[in-house]
Length: 126
Image (tube, rainbow, N blue to C red; front, side, top):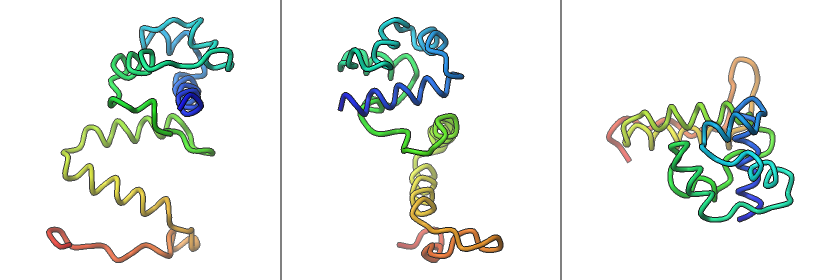
């Protein structure tokens, strides 16, 4: 859990132009403490994780789940999260599921970006 929270903090720092002070200002947090967590000299506790989520308007528990898989752009991840949050719940669930399918797909070529997607379901069918 401590490592996941640290990795998420690193992603949030990158999403804030790599500036701990900017993230600290936006999150109303102590920049020195965030720096220590970033450098691995301290761990992020439960209270700080919840405070960051609340001040950054993230879903409760967000800091406890891996948000920035290796090789992903944290800015893109944050933008996608904001888009998903703005969608009505039903559309959000479908959009997220479609994204999961895309992430599992393998590129096929320039004219067919993904070659192993299942057929698209019609609205209202299972």
